[in-house]
Amino acid sequence: MANKTIIFEGGAAGEFLSWGWPNRNGVYKYMPFRSVSHLRLHERLRQTGSAQCYYERAGRKVFFSVVAHPKYGRLQLNEFRLEEQTAV
Image (cartoon, rainbow, N blue to C red; front, side):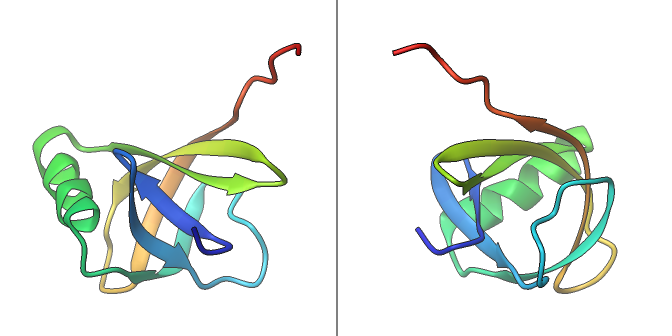
């Protein structure tokens, strides 16, 4: 997967374009992928008002909710949560 790939239901839906990593509530630029995952993300957003996604950073998943699509190439995100580490 690409560096800042947005994952929804196991597939790549897009990639963040911002310089830093999204980590707090706000609107972020992204490049949508022409993929089934991107289509399903927007279907879920229309049906339920939010879609749970994640990206990987330093070997850990960062989960977040997509709550709006204000315009093309922008996603409004909130509810950031870092994946729990498991003992090995």
